[in-house]
Structure formats: C-alpha cells, structure tokens
Image 1 (cartoon, rainbow, N blue to C red):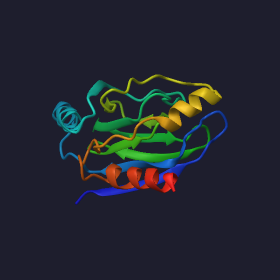
Image 2: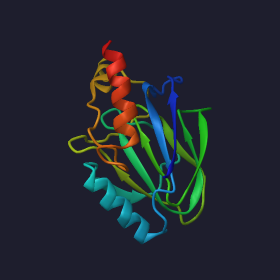
Image 3: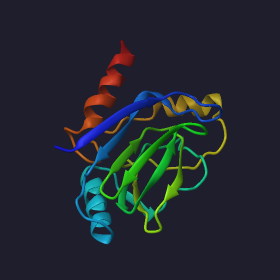
Image 4: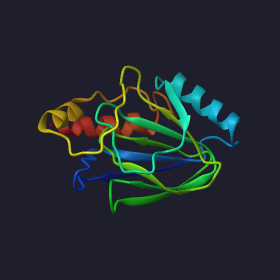
Length: 174
C-alpha cells in the first residue's frame, strides 16, 4: 500500500489555493525512473481519465491554474516544491511520487536535481491556464464550480481523491 498525504492550503495573498479540496501526495507510486517512469505515469493518468499533457519541469515562479485540477508525476530526480504561494509549504519529492493539486493551488519549484522530470496531466475536458495574479470574483466562482473528477489519477475509481474530494463536496452541500 502506497503512502499518501493530504493537506489543505488556504488563501495566501494573491494565490487563492483551495480551502475545501486537499492537496494529495502519493509516495512511491512507480518504482523506476526516467523514460520508463514517465511512460508508466502517462499510462496510469490516461487510464484514469487524466490525459497527460506534457513532460518537463515545474516552473520556477509561483503560479496556479484557475481552470483545471492538476496531477504531477515525478518521473526522475528529486527536489523541493513550494505549494501555496510565497512563504507556503515546502515539500520534498522524488522519482516515483505523484501529486494532485486542486484548482487554485499555488506551486513552483525551488531546488531540483538536474535530471528532474515531471509528467503533467489534467482531468478529461479541463484545459489548464497559468495565473500569476489574484483571481477576480468571476474567476473565483468558476474555480469553486469546477467539476471534481470521478477518478483519482493514481487510484482510479477507488482512489484517495474520490474518497476525500467527494467527501468535501458532500459536506459543502449540507
């Protein structure tokens, strides 16, 4: 059984984060590195309705996505990411780990190894953007209304996301 972590990030200056859906961190999802790990992440994400969009690094500046949730698969290397915007939470990641960032979650790379490689994926039907400014009231409404995927990019229909994110959604309806 893989180790998972989850935590909420609240608004931080211009970074909205997401105070109802937790960031999900999965440790040791795949047990290889490099191109084989990238292929495994791409297949896993695609099989669970999160088509992979890119292989690259994480930007070195604070940003968030206002139109999509994001899955990141660490295919090679290791490093430290900052989640939540300036002064946010530092998190160490290494090859084999995966993260799911709910819409609005600020993120950037801090220090990473030269071979750091990430696979990025988004739920089917969600197109990602890059935001480096505070969201408008209209953008906030759209972010809050963004559909929660039916499948976890790592665990599928019975993954951590489907349990915890839909639980939060139900709690918000009460």
